[in-house]
Amino acid sequence: KIVLAGHTNPVDVGEVNGKTFLNNSILGLYPIYRYLRAAEESRGWGRRMSFLLGVAKIFHRFPSLKVRMFVNGQEIERKTPYILIANNEHAMEGYHLGSRGSIAEGKLYIYVMKRRDRLGLIQLLLRLLFGRFRGRNDFEMFSAEEAWVETKGKRIGVALDGEVMTLESPLHYRV
Image (cartoon, rainbow, N blue to C red; front, top):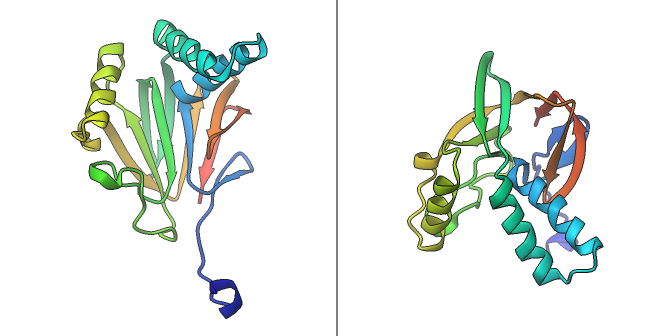
């Protein structure tokens, strides 16, 4: 019906180093987990076992990123296991976790996980599971039209709307 009626609405897209995303870009634990899971699948393990082995390996290694970000003219240095760069603001608590009030606000929202240890991640996951998650307790949040993220290495795994790829650092994000 909507297509036949010819109604259109503008929506934002995010971009990092020339690659576009509609929802989010993730650095840290998730892209690394996806690489580990794919490696297990290539060894012949089934999807469930690869999932479990990937989770076990990510908890064993528990990688952390050391990043330098430039957001709104401010330089920010952090060590964190997880960064989410969202195309427009995402709800960070309650039953609407991850939903967006607007898809045309023209802003990136950067969510940087505060806790850097396994216990912090386990606590966060339990709060998510039992509906007690409050984003402001676990994440620093920044908004901007543009952001730069520098990592220690020259290349970094980045998930764009769930698709994992390797990009060159620094990462230049914009709406």
